[in-house]
Length: 152
Image 1 (cartoon, helix red, strand yellow):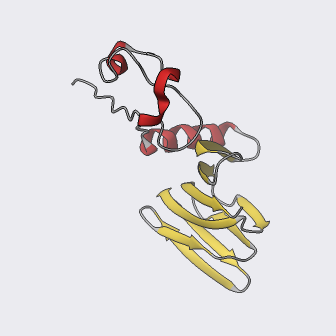
Image 2 (cartoon, helix red, strand yellow):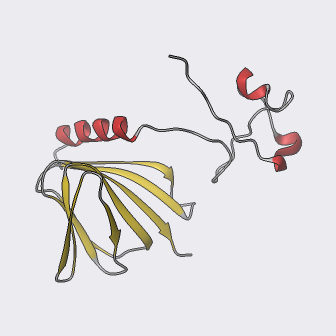
């Protein structure tokens, strides 16, 4: 099976653009993709299934029973997506919501708590995180995709 790489080349790159691969070069007439930080500079594909497997394996080897990897964004971005693996019974303790957030359950089961309320999620569920102090517990070995858009 052949691979396909999709490349997004913004029009504003001008002379700063440079060829990084022959494939990219053919799409910008000798000018390639300039990797700048920020959304929309280059299209990429990640396998959430593979990331879930890897993070769960790492969590099983960690004394904390947890593992996390930011797959998009970071502190310098408004949007951040992080794959988090928790073994059964492990928690992300109560904390404030830094903005708008969702938790997509990739594997297993989790419980999102806020105050006296609790929402159970299983594989395929999307939990909307309340704008209040909350915590997350794995009711069985679980992997979630946490998406946060920070208020600035």
